[in-house]
Amino acid sequence: MDPLVDQVVQVTGALLILGAFVLAQLRVVEQYAYSYLVPNVVGSAALCMDALLTAQWGFVLLEGVWALVSAGSIVLRLARRR
Image (cartoon, rainbow, N blue to C red; front, top):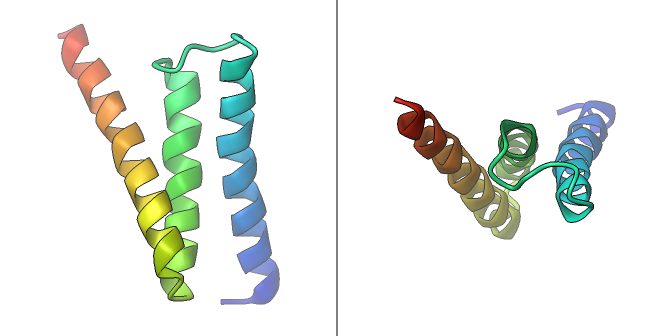
């Protein structure tokens, strides 16, 4: 992967996760709100894929689990609406 693209993916993914976290800590959004969960899924999935491509297994584990848990929360929230 192009080093510039790699950096853009990493910074964008981190900003999505951190932005959602900061907003949740400031009680602007709830931790089960889509505005919290979706940035977590997108950011952590992007970071997981980036780590996978560079064989950084610790980060694959961390970001992969983060993405799965966030995605699972979205699925549960959608299921409860029905």
